[in-house]
Image 1 (tube, helix red, strand yellow):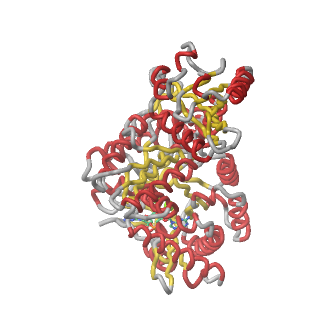
Image 2 (spheres, rainbow, N blue to C red):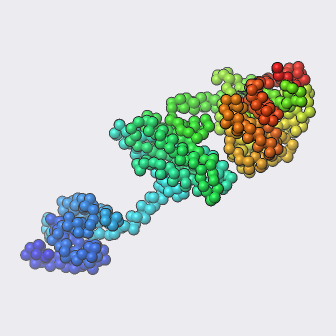
Image 3 (cartoon, rainbow, N blue to C red):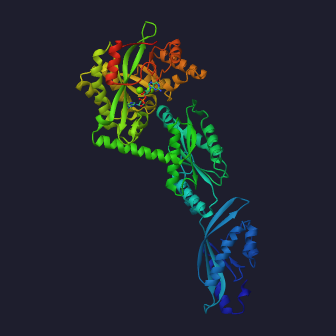
Length: 589
Ligand code: C2E
Ligand code: MG
Ligand code: MG
């Protein structure tokens, strides 16, 4: 090996000395001649048990081949070697050595240091130092893994999603042709699991859901958990826009299968999925996410369990929402309630002993809104918006006051037990002062609490928590009647029903509506009626529009009704007219 340095003894001596010193340093050290052949390897240099001298005079091609290192890794080393030769200076780099057979990868911090002749103009040799950084790099990778993954499900997390999306957008803009989809997935009714069975059950459901989704996707599809029960999936290189729909359908079907958790079978979970296409629905991260999210909400608002593509119309809807919020704010600011809002009242009837004769036992107060700019807006539209924007509190007070005042005018025509039924919006039940407000209003207007009924929707009970429970108990304690409204549209379990101190169940209009066309639906209504009876609840059928509806209900022992067949909701004076004319009774033709 020493011969290659030629005849100059002094120099030869110097290099030998140098290498001798290097031999003792406990790190990997080797040296190459300018052609890249090994001229020195110290004892620490990795040879995998092959005697070091076998490599002397051979180059890295041979070394990599003998050790079974992936030939790809050699390129980096050669590049920096050339650089060290050319610049006659130290270069440092990180080297990744992959051993395909063992499927292991090592990481090295490498330094090439050229050894120059005394004049400094010629490179005699290049020494190479190596530090095995594998464990450091791996722990860095682990840190990165932790930073980009969700602990519970092992899926990538929100940060990873945003990075991935940014990269996708960049590539889409560059390549133009790419078509991708972002699916925004939210599990339906997940909160109920957490609230009723506990978080450990919830966690297991999420893990199972993550696994089911992963299994039904292709390798190239990326799935992320944003938090809670929200997931996103990115589908790249789609051929057609509707490819995303078949993926969504598949996901909904796997996610809706029952979950077996610690011996419990949970079958209420479904999924709502919103789809935004890239580039069609946006070319920046926020727009894409917002649009997919909006599409997901559109699914939630129309009965959950399904998927939807984002459409421009959704943006229109959200503009409409904005207008409604702005107008509601104005009403509240100017205290313009009396000019824009009005309460109407719909009779609730009970079958009398006489044929086709029904007694008015109560009235439900329903709000109407006539806005100078937007026209008439139905409560089913603006109440949820008022709730979400937290504006409802401001005019709840007005609703309570106006309805009670009106009721005091109607009540003198009353029979015993005649009551006013007020709708409580889901969020108001969740607020601190709800029962107190109502109590104050009763005192102020000297109204007996048992002339009042509060309707709470079944869905609002799903957010059942300590506060809601306290409000309900307080209302019941004051002697106010409670009714569960829109029954059948939520997923309240029997367990829930028993916990709520409500005497009355109002069967949702959507069931009554289909009673004469859909035999399955008939069975459902019968079952609800039976269940109500066995729980000792009072049942009211909502939305009774036809004689056939009524006939079916009476045949199945339902005694109380509300609906257009008897009367539409009426302004106070019209209602007074109705009750006085008929002496609180209605006889159908
Ligand atoms: P809800 O409490 O279930 O009220 C019954 C709805 O069914 C009312 O719609 C009523 O007009 C309608 N209805 C009654 N009988 C029939 C029928 O035979 N056929 C049909 N097609 N409809 C019938 P409305 O007044 O549009 O109210 C919709 C929802 O808005 C209510 O559902 C309630 O959840 C909410 N809401 C209305 N007024 C108020 C209010 O003052 N406060 C709160 N928090 N919510 C209200
Ligand atoms: Mg109601
Ligand atoms: Mg209802």
